[in-house]
Length: 548
Image 1 (cartoon, rainbow, N blue to C red):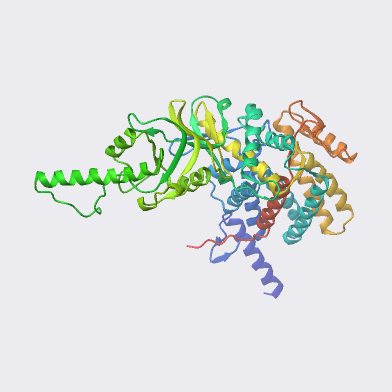
Image 2: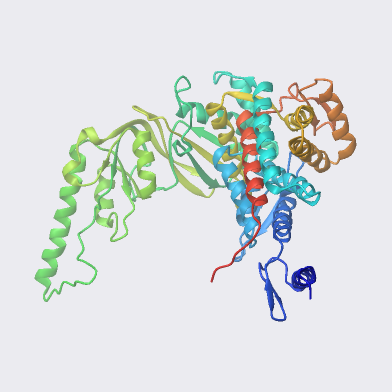
């Protein structure tokens, strides 16, 4: 047998092995012969898996997007069209598909909005990349060209953006409204958008701050009423109720103490026991307990404290019945079971300091407020503290809803609206919504591709075409003719009508800025950057190696 014959037979055996192997396993079996699958088979498997995830959320894009009902293993139901929430709850097994779930999470952390857009965009870019690979282009060349296209896209977006000031309340509200319009609670946009804007502006100093800590905005969800009853509280809302029969439920000119110690008799360690042999000893124990509690309460009363917030205790009761009785007689309002993680927020809001032991119970540790009252919220009661004398930069939102599903979705929607305003604090620039920036990028990148030569020109043109998935999907979800809509959009943008976008409400193409559909620059820039990075990562994978 000649050398060329042996080479041919080796190649034939290898191809037969690939044909008989199982897809995606990374290894193939044949009689007495083993070989690895070809890298493009692995790559295609990854692209198909990632595109399946993108297709799953594609119908949720835009104001006319559909909602998903997600049922967990224990029977809990979630209704949402938020891309990050849908993907987080989905059971994804394929490692490449998991990358798109992580991509959505990254966009949620970076921008807070555009979580569906970023996944749909990544799916379209992967589709474009798979077509380029099938034509014989090397994945590394495609990845480099996509990176170049993303840089150019960022530059173009910054060029068409409109700078804003944080004092421009209307622009901020328009951005929040655009985000809320695609949510389940879109009919309440007129109420929730101003609340989101006011909440962010109250926790920052617009002159110096370039970020927002959303932990300074506390959302308290209470079942009952409707979303119309949602309100912004300049002060504090506690979802615990007051305790004690005869204790006050409303205190004016309140002096508030936040304590982290227990007002109850000390207990032994869990493995120890105290044996009492006669009644005299029993009486002495009860008398000592009473004296111990009275000493604590006298110290509290000495500071003129009239509102007591008590941290939740695990080892023993935070407050005993006897202590509640004495405090109620002294007309002190009591709230117990304050969660440990809420303590820093409460202390910051009320301008008080947490008191860890009785020795530190001094007047300078107390916070003051004009009014502390217990109010009814639906079937439950909450404590509201307003008119804080030395407030921190914090705010509370009391969110109401008629059922749990609506309440949870309203919470997610307000979070997205807050994130949109945070984006504008980070990067103070707006761009048009309604797929106007994507189609503008598509047109401008296609022009830019003409100035290049070789593989880059071909790849950047494919990148530009892939961006058209956003207007196509928006039109499709709104019940319009997607091909006619995208073609007309392309023509309008070719004639330098930069702000032409899809008006979903009227079902036509119009100047989207005049319709007040705007979004932060950071959302679109972040979506393109993150989607391109993920696509590059997936393209460069040529094998999946499983370890035991």
